[in-house]
Image (cartoon, rainbow, N blue to C red; front, side):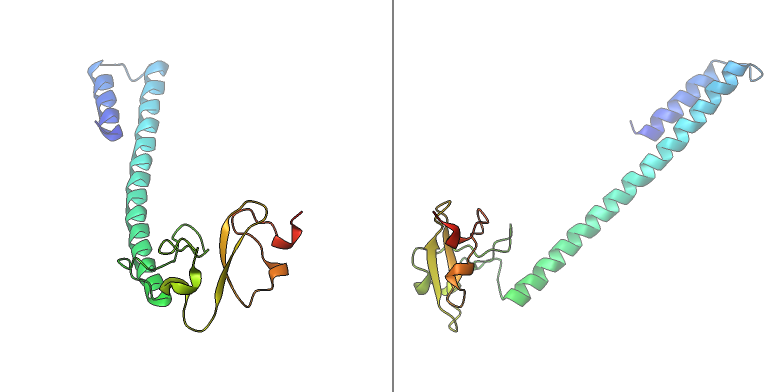
Length: 149
C-alpha cells in the first residue's frame, strides 16, 4: 500500500466515524489528515523525481563511458586496457607491473615506463621516465619517495 493509499484509508476511516464538524477536536483531526495527505503527495512527487533523475544519471554515466572510451581509446572488452575506473592511476593487470616495458598497455611507443617500489608502503608504482625521482609521490600512501628513511 502506497503512502497516498494509506492517507485515503485514514480519511475514509475519519469519514466513517461520522464526526461532528463543529467540534474543535474534529476540526483538528481533519486538518491533520489534510496536512498528512499534502505531505504524502509531496513525498510521492519527490520519489518520482528521484526515479527520473536516477535514470538520467545512468544515461549520463553510460554516455560518459563512451566518451572516455573514445578519448582514452579504451574498449570495455579490451583486457589490455589499464584505465582503472576507481581512480586516475594506471593499473596494469596484464603484467602486474613487474615488467612494464614489455606490455602493450604501459607502452605507447613514445615514452619509457619504469617501475619502483614505494619505500614507505611497498606498493609497486609504474612511472614515466620523464618524472624526476625526487618528485615522485606514491599514489597509495601519498608520500614522496625521496622522504624515505
